Length: 413
Image (cartoon, rainbow, N blue to C red; front, side, top):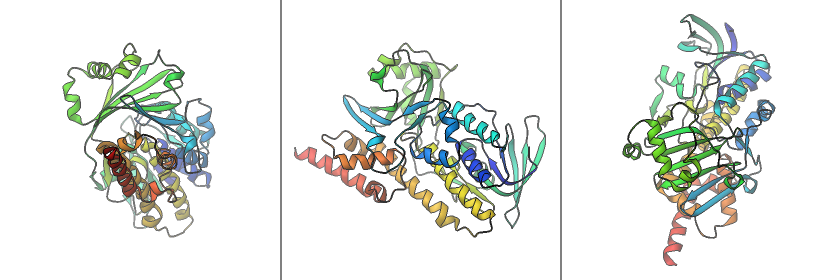
């Protein structure tokens, strides 16, 4: 482990490794410290095409391609007998038209291993216990290893990509409550013996179980499929027993899911759950540090925005850190936080529209406008910074107006 580096990166997930690789490529020394031992599980298994640009710039794309993860070409939404199928090749924005569905334990380790191959120091089971930052932005960070020994790392700048660990926000008192209501997810990895081409493994499928509860189905190239239920915490109260018993009863309660997964085996010892995940911070930057990925804000898993926001924020932050190290004055608010908030707010509109039913009206409308759907497809592909797209530039107004128009048209008919 380096005792001194130009940049200390906290976290070896996508946010940390993308930032580290871009900064290292520019000729600066980087130290990554990670609290966990890899491989380890984390949620966020369905990527969006916008991630590919960040992986490519970080020179991590080829390493991921070599793993032969499941190609993802789109996203399908199912509500009863109604289907809305988005193919990324039909999107409005020019960019990547495909990405991957990945077991995150394998994906994240691939990125971290590739960073290590590039000569970046990556050290696991290192918990950050203290950070002291001088007026000039230089820092001394104390980390504790698995044996309880303390080490210090001097750095000229810190990139916090610690994800749910949220190291700097918690340590510096920057956390604040999100405006998103609390929700819960119960999920697991299952064998998928009935999978066939009719199930379209090259896309995520989201089932509307009820207006406030939905199900994700994410097939992997290994033959295993990730299956998860998301809803208000109260929804799950009706399913008693262990988590294994709960998810078996949840599977039985949705006909399509019961038909496909009724006889499947759970890969893990028991399912996992995550609750009340939406959090945010007062600021995305400060003297000598920048926050990336879920450290800034995590909204909801419904549109797979987490890894995209992690990738793009790290891509953007890394280039600003490089300029900072070269002696430039960076306007962190206008050059980083405001652009990131624009993307986050676009996703927020669509998450809110999903839970208030506005997007149901749009997705499952009869004879939808192809141009509008291509513009919405670009949002679902992660291109939430394309201001030429009216469903990005005026996202809240246009989603609300379109939904109301469809409802009015249906009423008149």
